[in-house]
Length: 121
Length: 161
Picture 1 (spheres, each protein chain N blue to C red):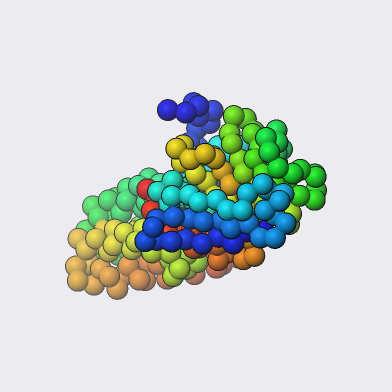
Picture 2 (cartoon, rainbow over the protein chains, first blue to last red):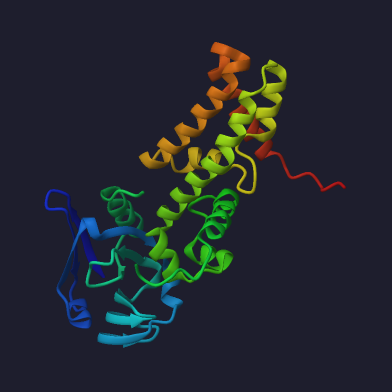
């Protein structure tokens, strides 16, 4: 589980990992420039997709997926125990990850927060 | 830049538009989109950024390929009754029939970008009815939208041939 916040003035999206998730993911927080965020989607089904190769972190299938993974040449960051609350955040090429898959408390609110903070088109 | 796309973007957008038009935005999951388009999840995210990004693209596409051409055709009719009948029969139809109407009801109140696209579609309809109805065009546009909504609400008639 992570707390996701957006600081429009600094143009930054922050994911703050809660409790033991710091340990599972080997991260306490991720900071991403908003300009590199392409969108957010509530996507429970992504948890059933192949995870690829774990680069760093924790993977117990069906229990927890956390940390850095590589799948089909893409770099993904996961922090999901409950797939129902998984949000996919797509990032632009310049970032250190192509995609974040993060469990949040309120997926609908998180998606709205992120999508409202970025421009499509 | 990047890996070449292994799928037809236009085809994926059309399929997604039909799905959104049939089930609504919330009623369409990423699983549904992956299954219907046959495109890998990662590729969908890479190209469209998010489900909302894909929906906005589908709506833009529906405006460009359906709403605007239909409106242009209606605008060529000068007979008021004929123009109104044509608008009721053809506006917001095609493979993703009702996508605009549904977006207006479901998404526009919460999403300014959707609201802007919906407004563009409604303005196109008003402009299309102006040659035949003059100042009454906005009122007639509301009639067209209302009639399209009523038609959508009718239980599907058994197919005849």
